[in-house]
Figure 1 (cartoon, one colour):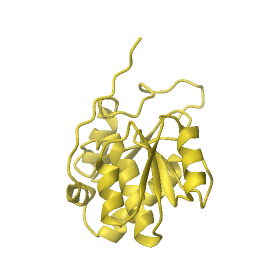
Figure 2: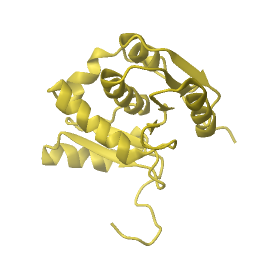
Figure 3: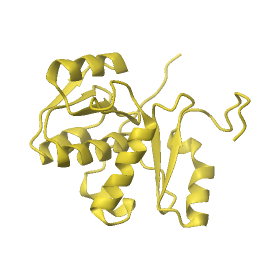
Figure 4: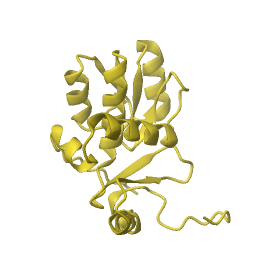
Length: 171
């Protein structure tokens, strides 16, 4: 809430950095909590129980919504879990994987005419809007998902298998 350039938590919107948001969601009875990184291109989710959902679920939920309305190819990178294979298969869509990096995903989307894409770090790209990761767009798609599924987020995500993906920084 202060525009002084100081971010109030570690800027990575990962589960271990979302304790305050988790507590806020639980204490207020919110249906969902949203956390973004400093440049607002990645979205992390906390369900209505205050449980942080994995970064891959942001893209999976968004892609599920888009593919439910508009079939077509989906593009993601090689560091995204198999959940995207499951979402694409569910909709009979082709999944294309690219090298890591937003530009690689975007170029793959443009080549294949993808209807949605992104990275498993919470970055969602909808070419109908523009070719860049966009957290507010991802939030809108998650809200659409909650409305369409007509059940809590914690329940709706159980339709997909749970995958564990380990991401570590070296150096």
